[in-house]
Image (tube, rainbow, N blue to C red):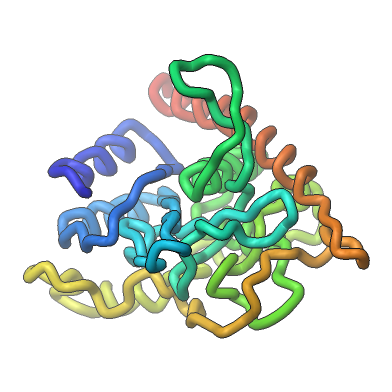
Length: 274
């Protein structure tokens, strides 16, 4: 369920200089226009907003908010095999995927490490990857960081792209940081939500006031749901025998979590002291 004040939390994060906001929570209830407006404000001020796609694939597959809002990068989960996790909610609003099945989590009562996960973990790793990319390219805009994440993602080997299960693919932080032919593209055009923001700019009342869902919620420009096989296997990461190098992806994303968090802290401190 959504509690009053989530929009204030998003505004507060942006006011403190946050460039990346991770929302690892969700509910199958439209949170209201206030949250949508807060997401819009964050994007307008150059921040990236990520959210977990949800964990209801085997329980009715209800779409999850705020992940299904325009301007929010929805992140699904893949497991060690490289395929989408059984629990990962799927649909046309899924933008990217990251390791989220059988990942390291703290045990109950903080008693060591256990295995667990969910799309919340996947969203956190995607956010950390964005932070790592941004720290290496501080002059890029949010649109460019996101475009590079999409362009370097491991694509599904079957079906349409984007896939309704893994979106544009599985994040690959190492590739995003080391590929020499990277083109971040137009700094002012969103790779996912340009049509939504163009429509919003042209409209005097782009956000519904009655509690109804917006017309273009988090489908992006081309994120139409498809009927592709339920696969998250990625080109260049899956061997011919079907085995996968996804643990290497997870390790890279784990490094992104550590170094990205450090980089984000440094950037925030610089902003506060400049």
